[in-house]
Image 1 (tube, protein in one colour):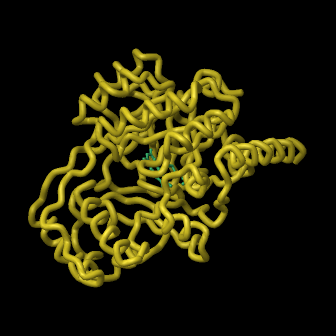
Image 2 (spheres, protein in one colour):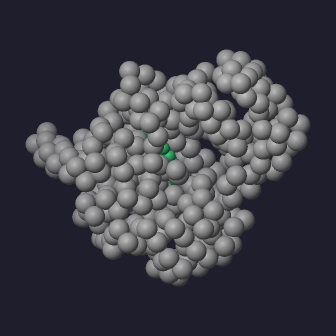
Length: 359
Ligand SMILES: Cc1cc2nc3c(=O)[nH]c(=O)nc-3n(C[C@H](O)[C@H](O)[C@H](O)COP(=O)(O)O)c2cc1C
């Protein structure tokens, strides 16, 4: 067992990724109760929603959980950009007898500008707190650290990993280009080297003085064993858990994940305004039209429009415009209850480690 697992208090080197809107308290609790680390994300809820999720978690497990917070630069309104975006989306709304919303806005707040959310997390004292899209102000980090929480930050590059270590995080999540969901880049306008999980993990393991958790395209115990062999202290899996009955994924997301198109994922900013890996669908295909030429509004203002379009389509029975986030390993997803998936992953991991030792 690595010192990181000991410190968190888990037996298995498997972390169920925080997935805003998808990782429910039921999913997180099942993973923690099976010996791994379950996670919830507070990135898409307000403080009341966060308090409800934290209370549900407390009822479902007494074990350690990871509470994830979004730390993006708060959205700035650009009225011209937003108007251009809505105009480009109008023909899609028209297909469903609908119109784009008149106004779109910042539907989720960043922790960077949400002291109430910080207060709710400080009060709940989760065993682990993780940051995505950047880091909160130093004062927030210091206060969370003072609760005894183990702090994690996503990093997609060495520079982001170094910044996280300087700020005092305890371990870094190396998120490879293969990963499903939002890419955790601190600055989505900066050049992105698009490192895969294996080279990024090795880079961070060799250069950073803290444990590294590998993420991206890991779907089974063999994948987990592979990143442990690369020096990771644990593996973080998102897409592998999307198909569990305890996840919050809707029917169209599940159908896409287990459908014949699961091997086609795309990195797109069209749905939310930030790059995210999604199963190719009617929304990602809009890049070939006017939307592909228009600069997106800031995250999550663009997401307000994306969610409205998905809802308009859904109201006419078309689920093809949803945020069907998934990583490149999507075709390997299994529709198992979380406890069964954890038992399967643990068995595969033990077997793969034995095979590696024999090799
Ligand atoms: C549906 C979905 C939602 C996600 N939401 C979040 C999130 O809220 N916070 C976060 O830190 N990472 C989020 N991620 C990214 C994961 O933390 C992780 O990097 C990714 O799932 C790893 O790649 P994989 O999906 O191929 O396993 C999400 C991933 C998915 C698939």
